[in-house]
Structures are given as C-alpha cells and as structure tokens.
Amino acid sequence: MTRPRNDTLLRALMRQPTDYTPVWLMRQAGRYLPEYNATRARAGDFLTLCKNPDFATEVTLQPLARFGLDAAILFSDILTVPDAMGLGLHFVDGEGPRFERPLREEWEIRDLEAPDPEVHLRYVLDAVAQIRRALDNQVPLIGFCGSPFTLACYMIEGGSSHDFLHVKRMLYERPDLLHHVLDVNARALTAYLNAQIAYGAQAVMIFDTWGGVLSSPAYHACSLAYVQQILAGLTRSHDGHAVPVILFTKGGSNWLEAQAAAGCDALGVDWTIDLGRARERVGAKVALQGNLDPAALFAAPEVIEREAGRILASFGAGHGHVFNLGHGISQHTPPEHVQVLVDAVHTLSRQYHLAP
Ligand code: 1CP
Image (cartoon, rainbow, N blue to C red; front, side, top):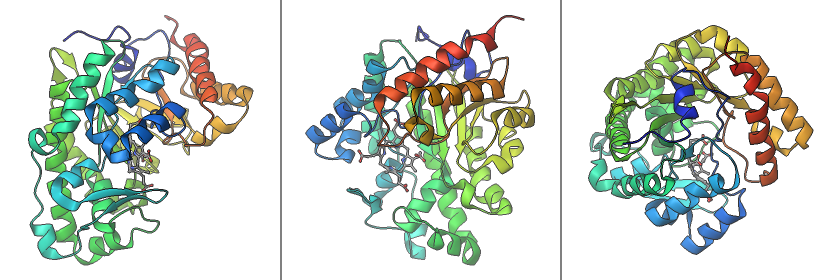
C-alpha cells in the first residue's frame, strides 16, 4: 500500500526528520462542528454513526475538509469492544455511555470472552477500509482502542464515574476477578487493533483515560502491565511500512519513564506536564504527543498562538513531537479557533526543524 502524500505524522511518531510539527486533535470529529451535528441528526444517534461505515466515513473526513490537519482518526468509540462482548451499550443524551449489563457478579466475569473482531466488530473494520479509500492517501489514518483498564472501568461501573468505587472495590477485594477482566480485554484489544491495522490503519493509539486514577502500584499492575501485553502482540509493520503505536494516559505523567519503556513509539501527555520536562524524562526512547489544555481554545486567537508557541518552544529543536491537545476537544469550542491553532503550529514549528 502506498504511503500517504503527507506522512509528517508517521515520521514524527517514529522520531524521523520532518519540516514542521504535525498536528491533529483528539475528538477532532465531534459536536463542536455543525456539520457533525447535522450528520448525527440524520443518523438519529451516536451509535448509529459508529455502526454505519458511510456515516463514520463522512464524519471522519469533516474536520479534514475544514482544517489542514496532518491525520485522520477513525470515527468510532472505545466502548464498541465491551458492546461486542455483549454488555449492551447505549448512550443517554447529556449523560454519556451506559451498559445494560455491567459486570457485577462473578459468573458474569467468568463468562466474559474476547470477541472475534472480524465477526462482532466488522462494522469498524469496514469503516477503516472505507475511510482509507475516501482519504485517497492524503494523510494517514489513526486507528484506536481504549486500554484494558479504562474499558474495565466502564464495564464494571456500567457507565461514566467520578469515584470509580465499583472497580476500585474489586481491585482491593477481588483482584483475581479484576485481573481476569483485564486479561480478556487485553486479548480482545490486541486482536482488534491488529484487525484495524490489517484493514488499513496506519498508526494506532491506546487511550488510557482512567489509568491516572490508580495508585502507583495499581497503575503498574492493572493498567501498564496489560497495555504491555497488547504492545507485545501488535503487528508493528504492514505492507512494508512501520505502524507506530501511541499510548495516551490521562493524568499519567508520574509514570512517563515506565511508559516509555513499555514498547510503544510515542506517548500522549496531558497539559499538566511541561513538554520539555517530559522530553528530558523519556529521552530518545519515544516521541511525544500533546499537550495544549483544550480550554485554551476558548481564548482569543493571539492567546492560542502564544500557547502553541510556548509548547513548541518547550519541546524545543529536533524531531519527535506531534502537536495535539492534552485531552479531547470541548464541544463548545469555536471551530475558527481550531484553524488558528493548526496554522500557528504549522508556521511556528518550522524554526525547530531546520537542518543542523
Ligand atoms: O455525538 C455525541 O453525543 C457523542 C460524543 C462522542 C464522540 C464524538 C462520544 C461519546 N465518542 C465520540 C468519538 C470518540 N470517542 C472518538 C473519535 C475519534 C476522534 O475524533 O478523536 C474517540 C477516539 C473516542 C474515544 C473515547 N470514548 C474515550 C477515550 C478518549 C477520551 O476522550 O478520554 C472515552 C473515555 C470514550 C467514552 C465516551 N464516549 C462518548 C463519551 C461522551 C465518552 C466519555 C464519557 C465519560 O466522560 O466517561
């Protein structure tokens, strides 16, 4: 398969030379875009957008039509995997995801099985293939999944949570059960990401949104260990090209050194850490992705430019930085401000990529 014409993202993730710093945004296709809301209204609801490859392709391309972004990300959700395990996912408007059958009883956990992605997540793979065709090698397509622990949070809580009491109770009272869920998830997610790669994802990202709520020993045992299990099982090249893997852990900057040694190519970091400091800590092991506070996009254009400049300067000269937000874009973000950010990153970053 041919390389995308703009392969800046893939090069930066592999810490290879680029002319400028590539940029894409977590949740770049979403409710801040009026065209997304129009497609969602036509689809009826969010899950139909995910499950219908025509809709998924349409919304994946929407932010690229507006902004000069350096990557597309598959439009889907991390919760499609537990849905495929039979937990019964639905989205309640304004309240987020809900599972009809959360994991509470021991027998429910013992019965859990890793789904065959070719059968139970066929619609995602079809979307990947269709998006690749529609992209026509313009920019690379990023595939993704949630981390085993982050999925376990939703599967055990039954939805979003502020305190994660069910999953943490299981961690302390029945660690054997939690580890069983994490092991099934890791096997499911390895097969799922490998299938996305086989169908055309050119880089993949593991979202560990809730790893940061754990104590340090629990993070290593329950989050990072299972991410490592996935990393060890991933297809790292396809059709002669490397497939870089990004690990994003919200609130995870305590453990950057361990993450950098886990076997991924790049680490996503949230806005709480100074990027230059993160770079010192990971050295030449991995690229870094991040880390503008999504709230900065509400500020005036000159503030957005200043913040982008500050982050680029903090990373400093050299390669291996992918500009992104430190978490998903807010649904209330003015779309014009995204254009300001993308232009600022492209313009201001060139000075850091000059040949020595
Ligand atoms: O239209 C709508 O109402 C749905 C809003 C929405 C969107 C646009 C949800 C529901 N999911 C998505 C898409 C999505 N989710 C993508 C698409 C690709 C992109 O443009 O980036 C991705 C990568 C995700 C991943 C995801 N889903 C995560 C991990 C990343 C993160 O933001 O931390 C998580 C935790 C979810 C669960 C989820 N799905 C949707 C919501 C509102 C949530 C979060 C619920 C919570 O806060 O617990």
